[in-house]
Image (cartoon, rainbow, N blue to C red):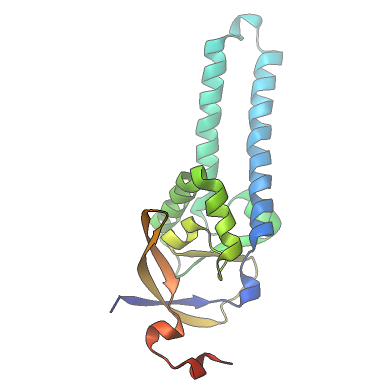
Amino acid sequence: MPHHKTGPAYKATDYAGFLRRTAALVIDGTILFTSRFLALWGWYSLAPRSWVTVTAYGRIELLWVAFAVVYLIGCRLTTSGTPGYRIVGIRYAYMLDGRPHWTALAFRAVAALGLSCFFALNHIWIIFDPHRQAWHDKITGFYVVKRNAKPSGTVQVVRRLVNFMMLTFVVWEPLKDEDRGAPAAQHAG
């Protein structure tokens, strides 16, 4: 039998859906690309002509990439999330009891950044998942819920191996009644 832990359960309406999470991504993308535009415009427009070189351009781009990584990881080290999450009124909720350790938040941030190369699949998965989790949420044990969502109870959470598209993931999932061996009649209600 897999190791079970207890975590918060939320109402289905508390999970942040595809449109809210997409809006948060658009806001964060707008912030990042506006900062890039302003940095390049400022450099090109205000710097002495001798500073406007291909080498300088490469350095500015490198600094912007470093800023973007710090923004995308650093802002995710709190349960409030990025400015986009704050503006659209969503936050992270840890699937396990208690407040997440900073390492769990860092793991989620790095996983989200790493899975961005599979953006469409990772993000579109939210539409089909009953808890509106993207793959980086499942892997790291987080939900994304509306800012004012309060747990409506508790649920047992279990770690499972999932094979998907020839890849194997270890994911956290709420334990379903059928996983506990409970009769279907107990699930109704």
